[in-house]
Length: 168
Image (cartoon, rainbow, N blue to C red):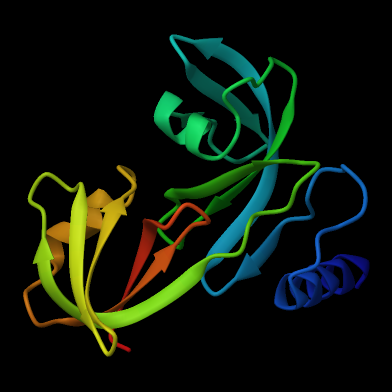
């Protein structure tokens, strides 16, 4: 019961856009097919951050480009981080534990172009044609998209596509 209450409160904080006041590890939560949990940077090699996660969860790696984009360019071994993965267990976002995940935006539209090398997507939206950079971990989702398909994309705080949802 205590765990359920904790998960519900975390959901309320997320819905309100409120960050927890302390720099404690996150309580695992599920939000719209996303799962959040904490880990600790165990090793840094060639700019890649190797994150050890809670027991039973696979270790994660964070590329130098993603680490720079999310503000972890000066990360240290032993530093705790919060991780957010999608329903396919793909890393969507990462943040320091003293900051909560920045808000993500959702944009609905029709696919006009998806780069075969997974770096860009173009959508036709009610506001017009828009192009977005694609996070390399989300790029594999582009291969199943067809021109004219209605989708909703999820953008991180840097306006980079981190997840795709079919339909509107």
